[in-house]
Image 1 (cartoon, rainbow, N blue to C red):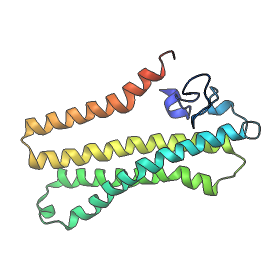
Image 2: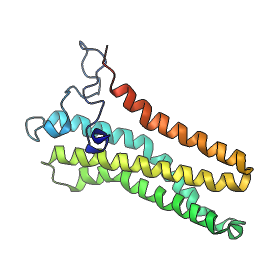
Image 3: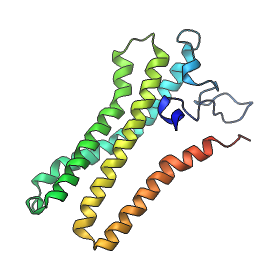
Length: 185
């Protein structure tokens, strides 16, 4: 788990085949911390732009979620929510907004931070992206808990939330960690 937060991308060095060019994937197996800002400039640039491309796909979905959350208090029936429901809503909204901020941070680093500190910018970009994923998961789960407790029976609500939490942990944590530790063919 320390590699997960440190900024080391478990997929650094992935390639299509050993004989093919990188096809957009990083070509160097070294962790970001070992790359030199000047000597490995192109490698760092490739990794950074790859991360920015991933965020271009992810960010609109999170922004749409937050936009919907902004409209909820103006809907009829919001006043009927109990204190727990309002707390869940607050958690969903704030964690969603923080996820947007986290996912936008690598772009800000790219535009504002020192252009010569390439490896440091990439390390922090990976960290903020990972923090954004955690916050996005918190927003999804708290939003689901809020809706499920209003719409579903308590046992079905609990089962629905449990399934989503297991899916998030399985697909966003366990599977990526398991596949990154396997030897490549």
